[in-house]
Image (cartoon, rainbow, N blue to C red; front, side, top):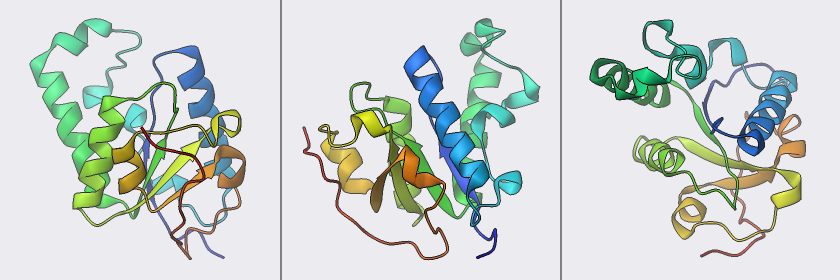
Length: 158
């Protein structure tokens, strides 16, 4: 296995639970032997002009920053092989939903990565429908992205 696949890493980071899932998924990706994380697109690492909105939330109201960040993320989805969405069933993220839909329109392989403790909970019908596979975060480090597979999510939908 070689590090042949790049990913667009879609994940929230706006509260403690999202940040925990973000960090766990990112750590697992760093261990995955099929992912070229160095050349992948992680939106937090590509904020317009390097402006960190966690430190400067006023930029969320800046049209130039917002538009450039949005357009940059679309470019990140188009330029990478796989769309990974860190999905929390109890915290539907409209931004992640948009990214998933855009990735589907671009013909990307889409995988939802769900925290182990939440795996099996019902998820949004549209997010379920757009993904090619859904796995637990603990499975991410060993998932072979060179041999993508389809699989149904074990939980229900709403």
